[in-house]
Length: 139
Ligand code: TYD
Image (tube, rainbow, N blue to C red; front, side, top):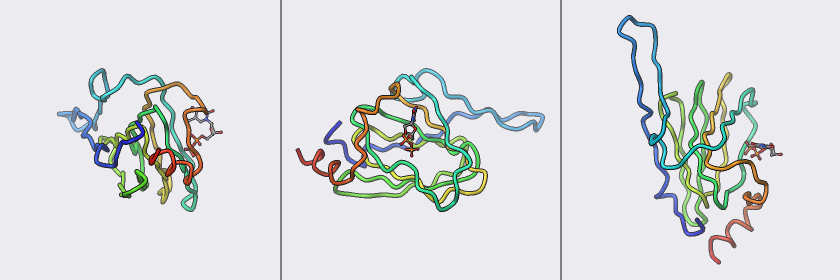
């Protein structure tokens, strides 16, 4: 949504089942864990520590990012305000609504960023130019 602000960003705790016999944890994302239906799953890995991913906003797509392994920072911008979220726990999800600019950076070695998203891939849904994004938000 065009007028969405960074206040609509959510950090959720993904339900975790810890094992009584010390065999580790199991985290579950199922129907109703996220505020939308997941239509696509992808993940980023082997990202160099000096690389920046993202650098775009989506018109419709909503997504949840999870640091399955390692850590990284997500810079979020609604055209007026910015915030930064550090993700470093496999049972924490960052829900980014549509209409928010995001940049992912500072990936640790071995970091894996899982994205659970609400739409199939459509290049027309991306705004990849920051100035165009700011104009879109003020339209
Ligand atoms: P992009 O979404 O720009 O990646 P990031 O935000 O992580 O930097 O996508 C990178 C490239 O991969 C771009 O050319 C589009 C392509 N792509 C697909 O073909 N399918 C997909 O599901 C995604 C997410 C990207």
